[in-house]
Image (cartoon, rainbow, N blue to C red; front, side, top):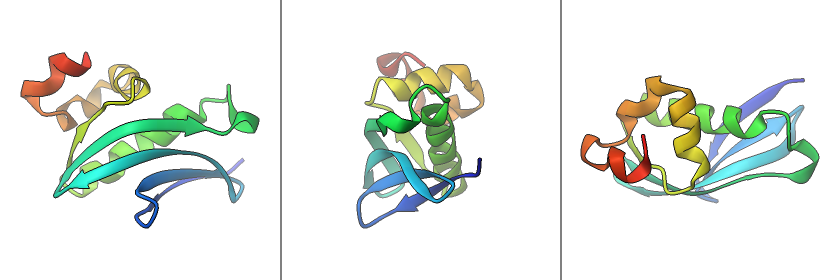
Amino acid sequence: MTTVVTDNPRSHRFEITVDDELAGYVDYRADGSEYALPHTRVLPAFEGRGIGSELVVGALEQIRERGGSVLPYCPFVPKVIRDHPEYTDLVPADRRAEFGV
């Protein structure tokens, strides 16, 4: 199983594919280098395999590479950040309590 997370800027979302098939996405609204993440979706055929976490980690890594910050409005994203505390610094320090990270 090969998974790839890519940015689809035309759709304003990071997408994950499994063996070249769309498996899920996390929507974003970018304001400069700040990314608001309001919604994450894993398609039903791919649920229960950790695809959502892999998707969010891949999106966070790409945002980090761009020098960006994250506002994790989707409740799933802060959970992933808590599971991967190395991404906590992407959330502005003065907003971390708001998102529970």
